[in-house]
Length: 510
Image 1 (tube, helix red, strand yellow):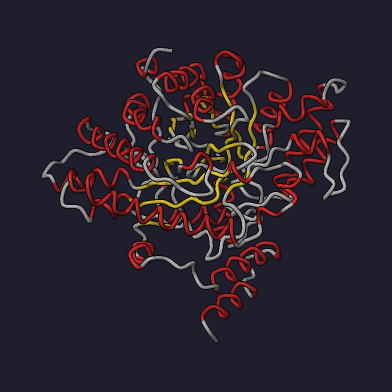
Image 2: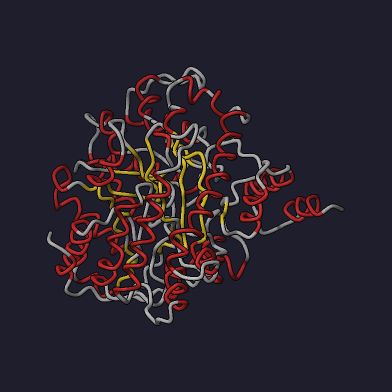
């Protein structure tokens, strides 16, 4: 039997998978049986060697990687295609969203964006009491986790301090589910410190939410706005990202004699090949897949002109360490000023190269640089521009080392500060650390707290108890537990070094 058919047979007979999980894996396997898009020989070679990477999005892309539907459209107008009237009550609005989510695709086969939920639901809450609101949100949260069990599904709240946002935070801390992922869009003027303090309490309880620097993100987009989706990716609202192509900076450094050749010759070459791959994938999606003839476009949920292209990088730490070693130096990324300066120079060069390359059928005609969170199989490379697991310094040094990178990565960059659990007795320290990180230029503040069951892998969540059960029984009802278990085995995510928060105010003026 040919290898492709053997793979299909093995999926069908895999008793560890649910029917839905089998159907998803069969679809991926069928896509991989198709011939790959035609590429130039150099581009194909770089892809085969995985110096550039297509994120295994499939041989023939038929849906964008990430779709950020503007769900306010269906709440205002209903949907002719889905035969839905515009809702008039909170219960109807939530039910409408539940239906809508099943019709918005992504690379995962499930929605990666649930909308700015507090803003969507607030107009329906005037006559709803606090306990009724709590009960409705709790039912919605359980529904999402049980029927769309994928930790890349992401909701946003904020920037205003309102009862829906607070109710969502209350429910999320109580249920401690891996899904949905959650981001608070924090604006010091609109949010107030009390809402941030409530989010910090949640982080100490369940390592959620991310906290996004809303003014910094807003400046990178237009009046229609943006959303945070999947792990921590910032993309245009009513659009999304057609594709994410990434470059393995470690492998680029290994092919370079020194830092000068890396910056001047080898990196530009591979950036160009990554753009060739990216344009080929976008062309197929727009010209052959038929995706943009869907009702999502016709009814205004999405706009085909608002789909970005994400240019991702990973392995920055290993690239810097490789180049330092080739120069006869022992400096290490994240713990030495000179090595960190080289990393910042690489980010600046990447931003320059990405901004210089036009693309067709892409929002604003240019790709958006992205610090990519890695794959579960990325052994011996660190996600994005992060500091390698187990060598993280104290939180203040950590922030100072990485803050200069953040201005270059408008479509998403995130560090994970792993804090020692005694911080639960001092939430004010974490709040000040978050504010100081934003003052230093961080786009996103994210923290794990040691010994919490719910932890972040690269940006998505797993429960350690789920991973333990998966390792013992080889089964999980959630799609991302297996990825987290694989990442723990191959990439060392559980080797993160918990740190005590101290001298947090030194990270920058508040």
